[in-house]
Image (cartoon, rainbow, N blue to C red; front, side, top):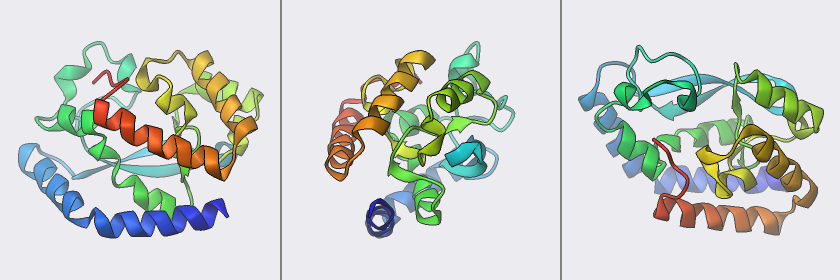
Length: 186
């Protein structure tokens, strides 16, 4: 049932958000050199690597590490990068990953391929068995500000409480967080 819900909601959202998608794509194209989309290697279910698209918010020469590991991440942002991140508009292309089945609307956020500590801890606690999500329990309870052990603790809690109604609650709470711009560092 979760997969059907994801597919229907993602297709509906792709139609409704077609114009904002186009506007953001043009903003990225005209404000910096490089491709509109950034495809990052992410860790999916059972620790399988998949390509996850986002609107590019960083300059092309930015190292491929988690933003919090950069000494001065602001120096790598494109002119519209900060706005796209704070508004979460950079996440729109992930609808493709949901349609494809690599992601769900709700689940643990997919780790970067090189976040070995996060991947190992999630695997130890069986979180790797979940399909990663566009949003998740950890996302609405701290987002970028959470240390990895706390993030995994919330991922485990999500796995234990997982249900359709809990997913709907998380989606609703995500909209509230995005509108308030809570928990965003860059």
